[in-house]
Length: 350
Image (cartoon, rainbow, N blue to C red; front, side):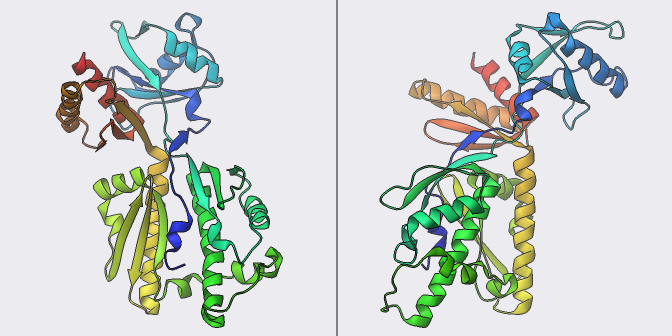
């Protein structure tokens, strides 16, 4: 069990969005600087409540935002979003405006990394626990996750929020670590029979964070896109004096390892570094969106042209991260930035 991080995800992919974001649209082209912000927010509310604009009851208008000319409209009913998006053209008009202003409307997905599907390997516990009972314990531990059937090889599919999967992984790692400690005491050649889960629960649930960090590696699990964005735009979160912070990427999951001197001071520094990384990751999960530009339908020359267009547009959106692959390009950034970037690439590719 020396590589405990292999217990967790074999593969993961973004599959869901926050419920609120499904009721929210992103508006670009709002005329900035003409009127007071609260007046413009009222005009936007009126526009998107009108039946002739396929609108409905507006729950909230977010304006102004960090991006000039961009607003967020959240409706009370998700069905209104679909109707608003179907309208060919939105023209903002009001007697307080000097003319009509065309608006660009798109979906908002502020939590692109909220939900992932993962496959956990429970096989390492075989010989220590009855796996079916361990799975039942895991389900009680993580009521917010959805579990598939336990496979004969000990693997099980799990779906839910990334933080909940991270908490589940920590729970399993703690159990595995306690087993590893018993192996050392009893000798690796000594074979123990499988036991009921309750016989082992007490030892598995004990944890001293400072003691674990002292002289040991501290492991954190991040979404790979979040990790890449953090490395590019928030590198200081992954740096700390007298600590070695490294990462291993396996598909859509990146395991960050924090190592320090085997001392109490080193342990404390490691814990602080871990909290900094976790806080940064949580904030990025809250604000980032990912859009995928597919290259599959294009010829080799077409794929090359799209990649060149992405690089050409990138300087206009300095806070956007491009992650190129053979079959697609992932665009990671805020909703407004990602929307603006992808729309500009589409416009230039026509």
